[in-house]
Amino acid sequence: MKKIKKTVEKKHKKVTPVKAIPKKKLPVQEKRKQVTASPKLQKSKATATTSSKPAIIGKAAATANQVKTKLNLALKSGLKPLPKPLPSEVKEDKKPKELYSIEYMVGSSPDILFEFISTAAGLEKWFARKVNVHENVFTFIWDKNEEEQARLIAIKDKEFARFHWLEQSEKRYFEFRIQIDDLTGEVGLIVSDFADNQQERESARREWDLQIHNLQHALGSP
Picture: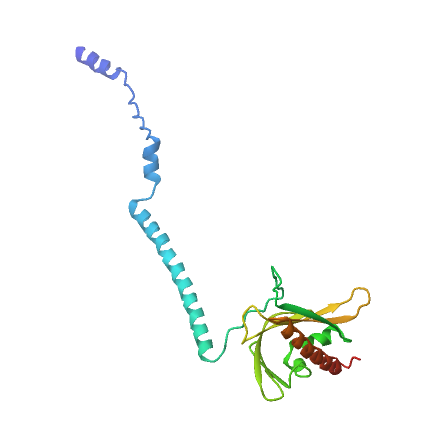
């Protein structure tokens, strides 16, 4: 009987449930370490970004070399770059003592008059026997086959044309400027030139009077 009781007591003993082991919470820093990529991936990304920069620089250098080769081919083939545009405004701080101006009345429209004072074909009709032009350098041929050259240094449409004699100082020039009277609408031409003294100025004025007379005759004005 004692043995049976012991076995019964053993059967009636309370069985204690096994508690589940709680999972340890990882700190935030360890989670971040797990999420971040491995050092090998980081190195591959860095090398990819750095390698893209030399590729862009290489493309820019290639385009620059292409432009240079095109320019060299153009120069070898005889093509010349376009010349710089001439200034349309001239500023002078002080009027030189040697500079003088003469005003003439011309019975012509500003458009036609401008062609006569700024182009080789127009100047050939009154200023010189023959006029040639090459790259803004005008060659004037006179009656005795004497030649003088002047460079067109400034111009503005329907207003003025300024020339510089190549044999003279760089500061000297002669200019044709169109002037329109606001009240009457008459068209005038102002000629500006340089002279060293009064005697030279009077002699040059007589020559300009003759030249402008030829211009009026070519324009058909009285």
